Structures are given as C-alpha cells and as structure tokens.
Length: 370
Length: 160
Image 1 (tube, chains in turn red, cyan):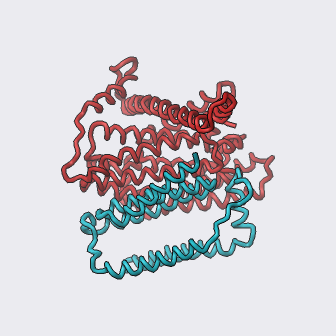
Image 2: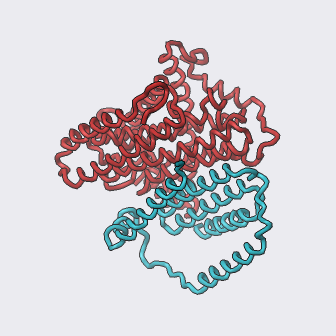
Image 3: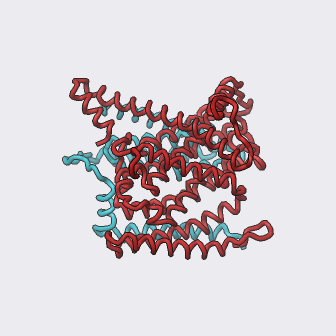
C-alpha cells in the first residue's frame, strides 16, 4: 500500500465523490514529481559543474549565492529571457513539440522510483519494464528536433541517436532480466526488498553492463555522440535557443537523475541502509551514482561512432548474454541460504569475462582492432 | 469516468489514423502513427492489460516506429511526399477489399467480457502460460524465425 493509495482511501472515507478521490491524489503526485525532480535537477547541474571544476583543477561556478548554488537559477533566467529563434525552413510544429516530447517521459520515469517503503507513486508489477518503455519515447522527441530544425548537423545527430539507443537497449534489458530472475518480480518495490545483498555484489557484471548501457541511454560522456560539439556543433539542439533549449538541457539532466535513481534502486539496494532514514540513504546513493558518471565524463575521451557500435554489439551484448545464462544456472543450482557463494562465483566470472573481452578491444594506432 | 477516457482515446485514435493517410508530409504521418500506437496502449490499460500496454509502447513506439522514421530519413525528397498517384486506383481497391474483410470479421465476432476480476500480477501468469502450457515450441520457433531474418538481412547487405 503506497502513501498515495492511503491518501486516496482517506479522501474516500471523507466523503468526496469517486472521481475527485481519484483525481486529487493523482494531481498531488504529479506536482510532487515535477517539484522534486526539477529542484534536484537544478542542484545536480550545480553539483556537476562544481565537481568538473575540481576534476579539472579549477574552481567552477562559485559567485552566485553560497558556493555558487544559485548559478543554475541565473542560467535559467538568462535562458528564459533569450530570444526564441525558429529557423525559416523548420517544420514549425515539430520544432515546437520536440522539447516537450523529450522532457515529459523523463518526468514519467520518476513515477515508479521508490524513495522509501511506500513512498512510490505507482507500484506497477512491471515497474522496470515501464522505465525502459517510457524512456524510449524520448528518442522520438530527439528525432522530431533533428528533423524539424532542418539542419544537417541535427540530422546526423538524429541518425546517431537511433544507432546508439537501439544497440544499447539490448544489453540494458538483458542485465535487467538477470535482476528479475533473482527477484522473481519486475516491481521496483520487490526488487529493493529482495536485496539482502545489494545486487551490484550479487551480479557485478550485470551491474556494470547496466551502468554502461544507461550512460549511453542518457547520452552522457563518453557516449555523448549526439551532441559531440567537436564534430556536429550541438547535435539535435543546434537550432534551439531560449526556453526550448532549456527544456532539452533539463531533460538531459532529468534523464541522468532518473537513471541514477534506477541504478541505485536496482543494484545498490535503493532506500535500504542502516541508521539513517530511508530517504537520506536513497539520495546518498543517487548522488553517488551521479558523481560517478561525472567522474567518467571528466576522465574518458569521447568514443568514435564505430567504436561505440562495436563496443555495444561485440562487447556488452555477448557479455550480457553469458552473464544472463550464468545467473539463470546459479538461481537454479545455488540454494537461497548460500548467496555468498553466488557473490564469489559471479565476481570470478566477471573478472574472467572482462579480461577475455578486454583482449578483443586493444587500442592501437587510433583504430580499434576487433 | 472510464467511459469518458475510452471515448477520448477513441477520438484520438481515429483522428491519428485518419491523419496518417491524409497528411502529405510523410514524417508527420509517421508521427501520427506513433500517436495511434500510444492510444492503442491506452486501450490496453483500460482493459487492465498493463503488460500488453507497456509492450505496445516498447515494441511499436520504441522500435517499429523508429525503424519507419529511419527509413524516411534515408529516403531522398521525403519532405514533399511520395509520387503515389500512379497507384491511386490500385491502392483504393486493395484498401476497400481490406475494409470489407475487416468489417466482416469484426461484425461477425461476439466480444465477451471475462467474468473474473483482472489479475494483480500479470507477468507471472503470462510467462507460465507461454513457457509452461505447451506454447514453448511456437515461442522458440518465432525466435528462430526472427534470428534467421536478421541473418538474412546481414547476408544481403554484406559487401563481398
């Protein structure tokens, strides 16, 4: 029983008509999601810029407000006041709708992320499949932007989106199936409750594959080929300015936040942890995952398109399949009381597989030898 | 309440499907098709088939429509529509035949509602039905068929 369900029951007993008792909790949930996620996105933008500053031995934004926390607000204001430019040859309707189609699914992901026991908007029994399905809608928004602005760079970026999204969805889904096998359910609540040992320890390879796939799905470095500024200006949002660009920007960080939350839920044990209240634990884990992605952005150079594709199809996909088969066999053979055996086995398998595959991807002379 | 949602979805679905054939810009037509897929997912939700609804979004919106869009992007001069006029009458005839067949099928089917309450957990029963009750072979054959299609595509496209 989630908190919203209880709220709905309370309204029912208070004598509200049926439709109102249904509508009011829904509206409250929607407003909660928008408020919390937008606030977190603003904080995350600041956090990333500060962290990047530290990684690159500079200060980062530190002028607006204490430690520069108000910098994203200033940036937002600046973007709001900017002129909204629409290219003359653009498809006006698509150009207008694209930022919305990118942004709304991001907010919808948060509906199934459990912040603590019962603090989840909709406890779907297909929670994680819902996340995958909803996040694939954003791709269409990127396409609409790419096609609608009738710009060659944007179009190239759109083609790259397809290649990237379609190929990285497979390893992501396969590693989720591993989680489903151990849990016996796809509901986010039961996945968290099933983690007596965090799944990152129980299936390290699955966790790493899921993390890398998610990095590609949220278009972050080193997989940010969609907006590779040294190659295609700014990719699909080349022709966007003002508030519409801000929507894309927020959508990008919103996806990063959402996937950090999903990774924390699936592999790091979600809200569970000793001493501190569950919400704090959840936030700590989300910030940890997000900081890790920032670390990767500061460290690794961007991949080339062919490297990106061969990494997905020749690297992650076979590893994900082997990982899935191993986990399936272990779920059948290893008794539930001997989970530590599974931890040891999976770490051994992960080490062997990663070593084997790293021999396939030796870098030499600027091209990948596969 | 549910009736209202149904009629809303029906209007959206009909408008989208008419737009698919009437809109001249083929990219917009593809986007209208996506809208139709989304409203079909909504119908599944109304029928308490949440897994089907999600799969509808995942497969049709996330994969098939993207394939269509990529095909459009790779087509030259797609923006001005296609010179379909050569096939106008043939297309009309085929469409009419399809319409008659579909109408005949739908009108002659009696749609029954199940008397039982919808299930809370939908994935486990679907999985058990698919893999436990003798449907294993069809499922696996479908998988092999898809695999052979992929291999065929690679064989055709591979440069010698």
